Amino acid sequence: MHRVGVFDQKAIEATNPAFLLGELQRAQDRSLSALHEIRRRLKIGMSELDAIHLATKTLVEQGAERSWHRPLVRFGENTSKPYSAQPEEERVLKGDDICLIDLGPTG
Image: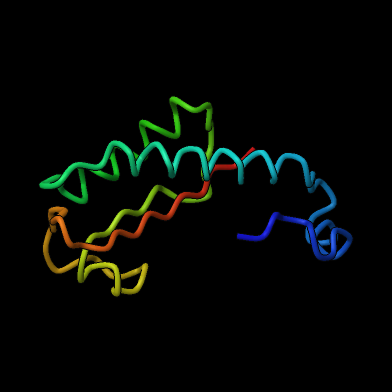
């Protein structure tokens, strides 16, 4: 993962006059910290919905007050679905599943 603002800080700042690079970097750090904690807490047999609740709780515990979007967690075959598509079934985490966790905390 690349640190935000490493390549061309002026181009990123130009997207919004109120943009603060430090705030975005703190959000990125919070995302990584939360991701590691969520991964640690995931359990075989946990449903995607329970994992979404876990992700939300973990973000709040780590001080996230806002998010660009609600956390998205998908297991196994559901990881290949488009973000906008609802999974056909509520999957539970199996021992050999891959897992997608998409977080978007701000500041």
